[in-house]
Every structure is written in structure tokens, then in C-alpha cells.
Length: 366
Image 1: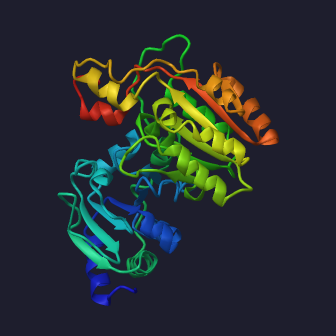
Image 2: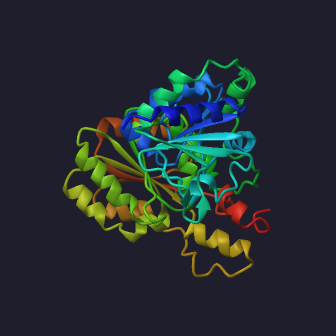
């Protein structure tokens, strides 16, 4: 579906009137192969790049990609989206979480490029203007129409900040014997081979695992079905069945894995090549963080640190409790040689609350 010429002219005028532009791509852009066109459009208008959560990693190698736009946005992304005066959403459904309930880009108008554009999505005004078109054809038409803009926002300083600043800079007191989940994810991102297939489950841990900016969208599956936990193991099995020659890594939480842990037997029986990396906080993290933040009892959400490694061995697969993150490169190299299935149980500090919950419960998150 090519865009209408008059609509392209309208959109180009909208772009000309904006000074801080972010080109945001969703799964529609992924499916249409619009990544290169979006990057060219952002470069021509001195803009930045972002993606929805499911499309994360589409611009993993672009120095001016600020990553995820939504509840999982990094500190740098939130700061720059807060400065934006125009968001060009290419192939995005514009769900409520994408704009963090309308708070993520308070100064910006939104131009939607989509075959089925919407004005209101999930009770929030999603877009003020529309370019009805295939995501790639629409982005290409805009990039061909607008003039090259002088570099201003795309500074070396911003590129350095994108590359070096942590996704979440909040400080928490360390506790002995457990890890900061942010340190776990950084270590994993540095050690896991680029060609492995990664699957991010739901739950409190999913925010942390999403912060792997080096990972391309083609090798990182984000699960957001209903926001429910417990489905990571089944999605991982699906990826392993579809890509039998690849190594699959499933990122999960202890409460989520326990919901369907019996499927480890299925995985072992079928010889699936899956490594489970589990953040073990001794309970249902999203729930006990919210309860604690509101001053309520967490007794119904805390069940203790289950010995997941022992359970995995009972099903006849490999298992480790990761006590030292410095061991991860060697352990990953060994798993690459042996393959098969394994569960790595990583105890984490249950006092560390994700920024998603801290924003929702600001008093308790202090």
C-alpha cells in the first residue's frame, strides 16, 4: 500500500515544523522490512531512533538508537523522548504501555505511518496525524521528500551517553550472597554468543533482561502476551522446535518457571537445546514489590528461594547455581560445547525494584 501524495506532503510539512524528532518502529516495521528506511528517515531529519518493546533491537547497531520506547525505556531514552516534539510511529499499534500511559513524550505530537492507523488506542489519544501506507513504503516516501537537515540533536555527546550510561542508574544497598539483577544482565549480554536465540519471559525480571542493547531483534523474542508469567518455557520450546540447530536461552523468573517446570521433562525427552537463566528472588517479584511499596504484607507473594538446580537435575538435565558472575564466560563456553538443556539458578537481591514499579509506586520505591 503506497502512501497518497497529498498525505506525504502533509507529513513532510509536519516534520519541517518540528525540531526534535524520534522515529519509532514497531512490529509492522519489522514485518515490512522497514528498518533501513526508518534509519534513513531519522538521519535526514536529525532525529533519533526508538522501537516498541516487541521490536526492540531493530536498530541495535545505530549509535543514535535510544532503544525501547515504553515502560521499559532506559534513563537516556526517557530524557530524550521527553524533549521530542514529534514522534513518527512506523508500524506501531500504539498501545498504552508504548507511551507509558501518555507520559513518555508529553511535548510531542504523533504521526502514525500504518496500513490501519488509529486515533485512540486503549483509552489514550494515540496520534494526531496519519500517513496510511505500508511501513516501508511510507518511511521511504518521507525520507525521499524531506530535505537533509543540519546535525544538531545527533551529537557525539549524545551518542556516548547512549552507549555508556546504564539503563537504570538508581542505587541500592548490596546484600551478601545475592546479585544485582542489572549486573547479571550486563554480564550475560557480554558473554552470550551473538548468534544464540534469546527469549525474554514476562514478570519483574523481564525489565532487566530487555536491557541488552547489543542484541538484534532477529535473535531476541520478547513475550508480552497478556503480561502474564509462566509462558516463557513454552515459548522457548517453540523457538527450539522451529530452530533445532540453534542454541536457545530462555530468561525467566523463579515464580514463572515453577508454573510449568514439569516441561523440563519434555525438553529432556525431545533433546531440545535450551538454557534457562533464572533470576531467583524467592517469590513473585512484581507482586511482592508492589505489596511492600504500599505497606502491605507480602506473605502471599514470597515462597522462599526454591532449589531450582536440584529440581532440574531431578529431570535429568544440567544445572548450576551461579554464585560468581565472573564464571559466566567459562560456563557459557562450556555449554556451547555440550549443548542439551540446563537451568542456571541465579539468586538476586529481592530489595532491588525495577523503575517500572518505582514509577507506579513512587512513595514505596524511594
